[in-house]
Length: 76
Image (cartoon, rainbow, N blue to C red; front, side):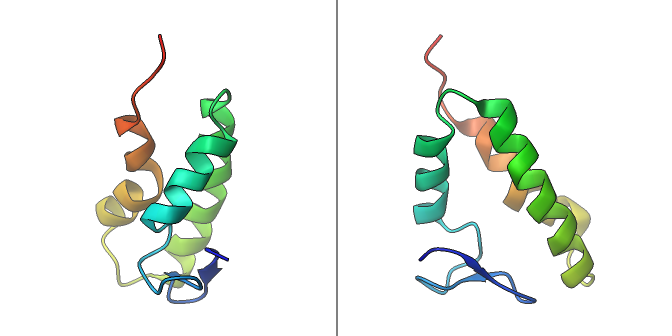
């Protein structure tokens, strides 16, 4: 349910900026053992969002789509 609504990139489930906190938790759980795959998955959405949200600052979109996984604690 927490999928993006384009072209505004808001969450269909909670109307927060996508990926919303719920979707982030879901993605962390799904890609727990595959962080590189998570980044590849998010990179595709990042590219699409950059095309749709041309008015947004690139750094803001980068943090929104690709920056938050860097803050995930690792199990090492």
